Image 1 (tube, rainbow, N blue to C red):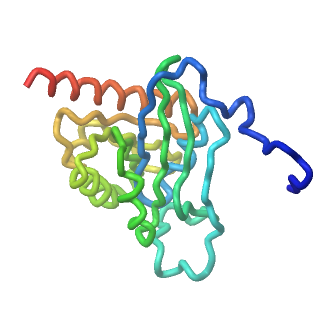
Image 2 (image 1 turned 180 degrees about the horizontal axis):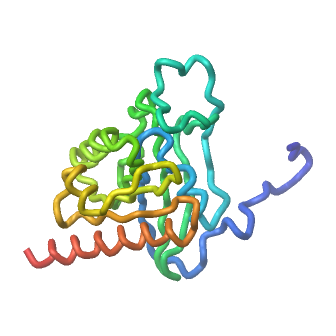
Length: 206
């Protein structure tokens, strides 16, 4: 686009502007292994057009990237996804989706910086990937909830079975979700906010 001869540079679209009632904001990261639905969740729940950094997967990734369970996936996030959602008229969440391929995990440290909390998206076909993800969050002291993305061809387990398999402590919330549905993704974020509030209240009493 050529702005020569113009005195002004276009600002953000009206629908992308921060609500005038917003008084506070929090950074939330959405993490998980490759192909668990992070980009989908950010896109489904964001009230603005999400920023994505997806690139087409090529033959060069064969033998490097683990796409088990995601053979039909043709693009992958190489930096981050970004979206925004207003939880109330006063509180806005900035959503940062992390890249899932392990060769891009070095970017996670920067994305975790300043995060209030995280959503760990899980695919029951590849539970083992989640241990590294949760371990990194624990190392950084970032509280998290676990959301099991209900893929049509993925095996279903009882929530308490998954809690045991993932070695989650009783206080960490875990729930099923459908990352494609805005209401379901919003419920996950609301669960995270309630969890963070309970942690803050517990800390204030100690």
